[in-house]
Each structure stands twice: as C-alpha cells, then as structure tokens.
Image (cartoon, rainbow, N blue to C red; front, side, top):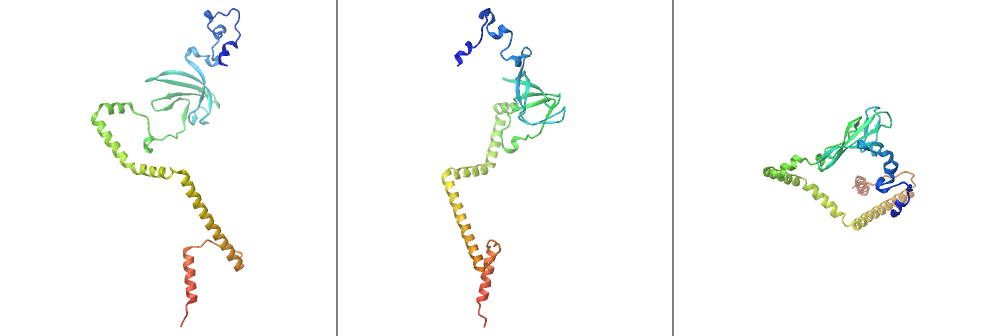
Length: 240
C-alpha cells in the first residue's frame, strides 16, 4: 500500500508543486501537527516514559518508573558526537514541572529541576560489573607505558583472585551441558525417593494395623534403631 500514499489525498486545483512542495505547506501546517507547535524554538512534543522512580518536589508524591508524559524535547548540546537532550513535562498530580536531561557520559539521566530520584543505584565495581569508562584513564593507559604495565599487573592479580569463581562457573556449566542426562538423573533420584517413602508408609500402616494403634508414627532415626537393638539384646540375655 506504500505506493498509494500519494494518491489518497485531495489536491486542490490551485495547488502548485513547484510553489507549495507539499499539502502541509499548502495548508500552512506541519506534518507532526500539534506536536510541532514549538518546532521553531527547537522543541518537539514527545511521549516520555519515566526511566526510574522519582519523588515530585511540588507535591511530594511518588512517581513510578514507566509513567508516561507529554514532554517538550529539545537539544541543548553535544557530548563528543552524541547529542544532549532535555525533557520538560508537567506532573500529573500537581502543577510542578520536571526537567530531565540525558547523561551519555554515565549512561544515565540527570534530574535538573522539580524532582529527585528514589535512590536504588549502586557502584558496579563492587560486584565486578563494567562501569562507565573514564576518558582520562583510557588516554593515560594508551600513552603512559609504565601505567599500562601497572594496570596489566593489576588485571593479572584480579584474574588470579577470581579464578575460583570462574572454575566453579565452568564446573556448573559442564555439569549442565547435557541437560537430558541431568534431567534423567534427577527424575531417577525422585523415583527412588518416592519408592522409599511409599515403602515406609506401607510398613507404618501395617504396623499400626497389627498393633491396633490409632496414632501418628514419626520417622525412624539411627538413635531409635540403636536403642531398640539394645532392648532386644537385653531381653534375650540369659542370666545365670
């Protein structure tokens, strides 16, 4: 249907393609309609989804992650070759406005005005995760030979300290490589356990029936077996 897009519009008799270029230009409107009401100011209206939980500083209400707003989006600068954007939106619970900016340096968002973040962040380095790369560190690593040697030694020490974890992960991965055999062994152990439980239950029911008891028997223990054997030995002893 893409080839019919240009045929599904009414072109007035006085429409001149060389002069008007498009129907939007002819009618004096923008293709984005009301979303482009402030396009001359560099502002575009978009749907902004809250990337994390925040607190509104106007009404002190909690705004959950995923709540969507009609936000004014505009470009405010550049971080190297990545554009920086600012979003301005009104709180749906009061007349306060939120101003949020992108932070590509730290792969995050910066809360500029009208709200504060519900802190659930952590330091990735504390749990051996990759964090944001420091440009000065990478430049020094490329230019300073001694610093590079020291960093390589630190990497070796870190690798040696985490070798146990890596070995354990490799063992788990190797154990679960043949998932069919692992599932078969697990099902076999379950069947053996179920058979043992059924055998013990049948033995208990037989004992209760023979002794005409109406009580709940507890599971056998090693101490009980030893005590019963000692009692039987004592009863079978012949005193002279």
